Image (cartoon, rainbow, N blue to C red):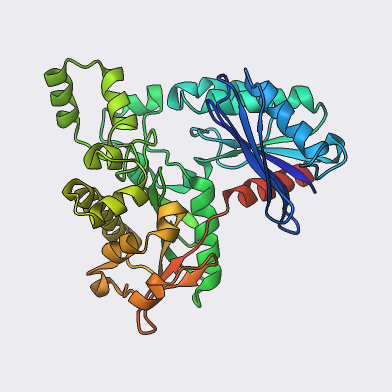
Length: 398
């Protein structure tokens, strides 16, 4: 089955064309600056790439440009959009309504619209992508794959906030978690890499510009670091992560901020960028640290320390650990972060091999010492495959 995978953001659109049965990717790319001028970057074949400046006033023109590029000209990989058998959409927030991937119907879209207050930046763009694909490719099945679905197995004592209970019953205020497709893929890969097949206790650190940690018991998530929204949890590229409500209120009173102003600071001006004052890109901050910039050093230490605290907490939540996994742009490539996170975790059975840790590779690997009681894996994530495979399963079952 040929699946068109779509991840629609507010001003960008990532895509991939894949056959999940044979795990073959035919093309991938991104549309950027939608609503401004429009740029399409398209990768296909054996490391071939083209870049086009195309007017994209809305997402519709962006998707039309992608479909045109897939079917004609230099970037062609299929003869017609009729070759596409299904469309899989990344959907950020499914609330408690969706615990798995679903065929997109009018009712599903209506439910997602009701959930917009929980993800005001993401759900509208996700819905738009679905509606445009329904218009441009009528009759083709569309499937919504939710970031939050994997975390719906959390027990109530893990996902509830200690606010008045009616805030949950009236408004759905609770922890939902995100990056679910990545946490599912990586934890499932880790289970396959372990000698132990049952009662597996796995901690996944998805580390990138957005970062989260999950505790996975026998394939099911029992806790995760992100909350009602993605700002909770780890310190990230521009997100603050865990900040006490009192500190937020004090900042607002001192700076004369509205709640929207404060949330803008917490989401877009904090984290690695806010502490380093240099960049939200950890690679640039690591370079700054090497050049003697102490704020860059502080940012790196804070990133690693925050991850380490969650790892320790989740070892306790799981009553031990069989594998600690690193994934995402930072998790897969920043050996220093892995080193700092694992330092001192020997008593938990996690002993990092420095030689293995410093070797670069694009494949999944074990970087623990041979004598380590628990394994430490670096596993490249593949969220697109999860979306494509779920789409294939949903469509064939329906």
